[in-house]
Length: 130
Image (tube, rainbow, N blue to C red):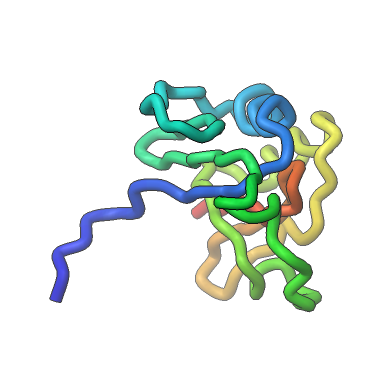
């Protein structure tokens, strides 16, 4: 058995690094962090210990976003989540930032609240609060 500690990062393939930076930094409040001098274009962002590594689409990385997987309920498809203090308040902020909520806010059976939306490349992002 491995001794895993936590998720280190999520890599997203993106079509436009400037749009990705604006979304994750200016709208979601993540911080752009230094990235090693790779021989391919990308940006790194962090929120606490969580990092997103955005890689520009290319023949090597593939196309941006996720193909339509056919799911009709956001919470059951591919997504990643950030914890927040209050999903209801954050959902209101999303609206003022011009980000459409695709599902929620909705309370789970365990009491947590979830809200879902898309980033510029169609990746599903979740916010969850206790």
